[in-house]
Amino acid sequence: MPYANGVHYDSEEQRRPLLHTLISERVLAAAYATDDGAGVLYRGTDFVEAVAENDTAGAYFVETVDGTVTLHTANSSVQRLEMNAIESFLHVITDPHLGGRASPLSFIGPARRVPAPARADELPRIDVALISHNHYDHLDTRSIRHLLARNPHMTCCAPLGLGAWLRRRGVSDVQELDWWQRIEHDGVEVHCVPAQHWSSRTLFDRNRTLWCGWVVRAPGASFYFAGDTGYTPRLAEVAARLGPPDLAALPIGAYAPRWFMRGQHVDPPEAVRIHEELLIRQSLAIHWGTFELADDSLDEPPAVLRAALAERGLSEETFWLLRQGEARCW
Image (cartoon, rainbow, N blue to C red):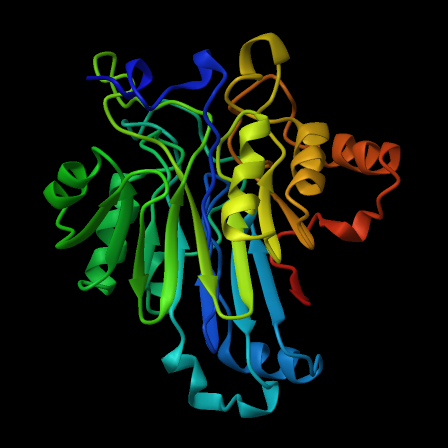
């Protein structure tokens, strides 16, 4: 039965919120990828040196390329970091898309408007992949297979209905979750959370698989990634159940025209509203600038976000707009 017709619903019903996430236990690196591309992940020395300059517990080192985020956190004293500590990190990647098109075909469909910033063999070891839903700009067959070639034991966490698809592509360790279910991986909690969106890869499978977000929690740190979602007050339930996120990656693009996109993609003012309603400490803008998926231009969302922050009296520093490849220690 399609999820839209039961307990799970789609954006047409204006009920369902979307989210993903990652976070650290003692030392956690989260490799972050959305439909804005795949990120060139950290250089080990850069992370150690950057965190050492910010000698606080819970420091974050964030690097982006194409709106893709690599998150590294140190949840214990940064003095404990050593050059070989990078091997003990848990690396998590979300919605990896390293390809040139968001399409089932190589010659047609939305094309990447900036070069892919990384190949699978340029990424660090990937322990966990978090999949939010099955749209082509979030779930790419070639990217999954390339990652598996480098990381044959990678765990894939996915919403209900996607397990079979992943197993057919060679994933042996699939964790298929419903909303509000969770697993633990090396002491880190991975929570599947609601989203207001929909799913489809063909003309005949609309809402046959679930969509979701992910929250990753560790002692003293939490990270929330809101992949594709329309705005709904129900998003606040994520913070009510799991606590306000320390860091959140929120989408700001592919929102026009509003009469059509409102139910499935937030616009920048709604992203700011989510930032406030979930009591997020620090937000990071994602989901813009790479694939042309709607009527808003690739460079429009940042300007609209700045205006929305100003209208709410918020500093631009509360909602990062990182340049491609920019790193931030927090």
